[in-house]
Image 1 (cartoon, rainbow, N blue to C red):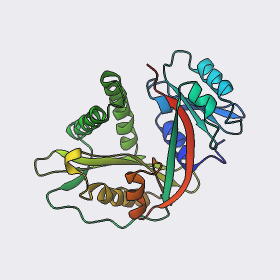
Image 2: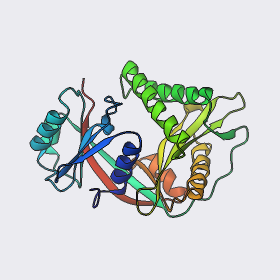
Image 3: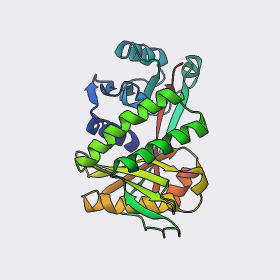
Length: 265
C-alpha cells in the first residue's frame, strides 16, 4: 500500500495509524482519515499513489467527496507535479525533505544551564502545549483558537503513544524550569526495517542557536535504538535551516515528498 512512496510519507501515515487514523486503499490513491481529530489537516487527506499527480481537478473532487465538511484541502502526491492547476485552485505547494540515519547520531554537549528529561507530568505536557501556542502566535500560521483545540487533541494522542511504549518526548528546561526546547520520536515496528520518526522539533525563540535541538536529537535517537529502531527519519521543509542542522548532526539528505495544501478560511 505504501510501497514507492517517499519515506517521509510512509512514516507520516504509519504514525497517523498508531494515533488512530484509518487508511483505505482505492488503488490509485489512499484516503487517510482520523475520526478523533477532524481538524488535523494532514491526518485527513488524500494520498495519490499511482494516479496522475497533474490531474488536480480529479483529486480535488475526490477530496471534496471524501471530506465534504472539511474547510482545508490536503493532497499528497507520489512525485512533483505541474503547478498550474493546483495554483489556480488556490492551493500552495507542500514540499519536505527526508533525512535519515542508520545509527544514533553523536550526541552534542548539553549547553550549561539546562537539564533534559522525558515529558511525563501534566506540567511537562502543559509546558509543551504553551510552547506550541507561542510558536503559532509567532508565525501566525493558524487561527489561534482552532490551533489550540488541535494541539490539545494531539497532546492526548501523543501521551497515549508514550503510555503504550511507542513514543517518547524529551524536553530541555532552563534554570527557571521553563521548557526551552522539545521534540518527540515514534518507533514504527510495522515498517521494515523498524523505523523511528522524529516529531515536531521546537525551540523557543530565546533559546535558539545554542545546540539544544541537536542535543535532543541524540537523546531521542538513543531511546529509539534501544527499542529496536534500525533507521531514523526526520523531515524538514526543503532548503531550510532545519534541514541543514539535521545534515550537520549526521543525517543523510534523501528523497522529497510533494503535496498541495490549503488551510481553508
